[in-house]
Length: 314
Image (cartoon, one colour):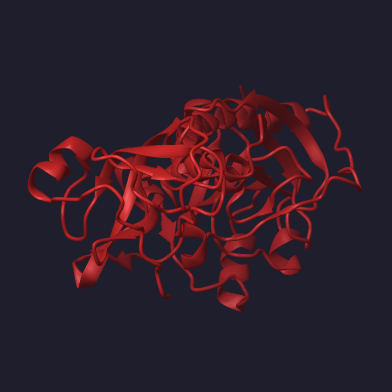
């Protein structure tokens, strides 16, 4: 593959790292890496660089961390790079039209859903939470609208009942990186063309908020397990037990038809009644403590059956 394809790569989280590495291994020329600014770690600890920033440092690539892209300095910098493409993978900033117009062949985005389903910030989380049986990678030419660009390539993957956000994100990150390299090469060489997205089946994957993390036991056991899987281990699905807000890391479905109030702990091993069926908590994390199995937690934290899960007030 030619090494004359000049790219500015824009990404931030761990999800974007395989794409950057794959582009370099395919001999694309990475002229610069743009990422979000370093952020303080939990509770005022030291400032941490984004995963893509750390990877770019290891590779000796120039890194830029502008607050946004709506400034002349950024525009002028990018114009001087003689770019064929800007490649965006989970960057976290919107690209204005004046930036979209800079590269010779356009701006390409890798998005972790089967567009137009789950446009937006949290497509993998939302697909798991909704109980989708499939998701995928869409690679598109970027436009000004949110994930509305024309599709260059798309690849579908099944979602299993065991898939957590980490498992599915990891799979999509690596499979997406492979597809990205193939797509850019084919597009530049005129072997593929873009196709407009369908105008039906459009949904939006809103960013995960605090109220999304609360487990409501008035819902079905299946839906609660999907939420736990979608949020585990970070930011975590939460409920309140004995005055503590705990993260539920893993749970399993327990079938039962007993007429018991939702949110009641019905056994000594943390089986909790839901609207239909129940869930058994297998691992959890108390505030300020490490993730532990429910058996380990119950050795030092006495929780009796017939207690009720308490309401979380945001």
